[in-house]
Image (tube, rainbow, N blue to C red; front, side, top):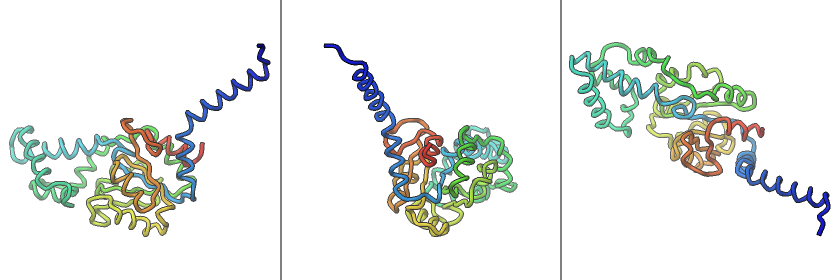
Length: 248
């Protein structure tokens, strides 16, 4: 049997179409989820989302123990063991755990704690795609930050990209909450005078950036830079979020 060129071309186009749909089904489904209603605000976590965690790890787990070692005239390793043990003793359920001022006082360290954190600002590493993504999204949406990082440290972390954000919210500094709870996200929405359905949030914590905001109606995305999870609402970097929101 001889198959006509027209039929052959038809089947080739069908195969191409099916392959395209298979590859892009996830993106298409995510776009449909986001654009069911209009989006007014895009909310970002900070650590692991806009900047990596190297800066905070360096200051909390290296620089402060070294400062304590010099004060107490002990070896750096012993100082680090003590400092980390004290961090664990207080624990991250206590709001003091997040406070540089608290730890400087507890360890008897001299100087301004925020100036100390500021002195390491050159160690802040912004993820490569972040500036361009923020620039493009800020032309269409209001951008905000929603984080539990104390405001003094936060301003150091976002100094070079601060211009893109209309508001910055810290659960610990603004609301005295140690976690980004449903209450936190609700109060952010109230402050911005929008309903949760008007907000898209993205961050790298499965519970506090993805599951919890969804409970009050915020459309959230989980940022998995390590590529460990598979889900229609999991993205690998912020360029994927940009493509979804701008439909590009």
